[in-house]
Image (cartoon, rainbow, N blue to C red; front, side, top):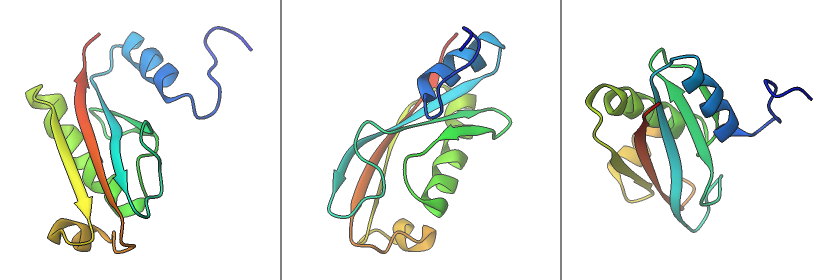
Length: 111
């Protein structure tokens, strides 16, 4: 494997490569889980300013919400922590009804 190739699932290597290409990025990290959660703490999702992404922090609709928040984080530079859980109205709206709870920290990556 050459230096420009990355291992499948190596989200941080993808972030490094995309940063090297001059893309504006945000990194989402699962910082806490409780109960049923599709991804463990430490899982990453990198998002660029055009909405391209690599990795995973949860299932479909939650990731859509995280990607939308990442666009704001990239623009403002202000990190934020998102929480999705069964008792949270946002969780129902995005389809997280499995009984678990996750907290995801989203921060802008600087080149």
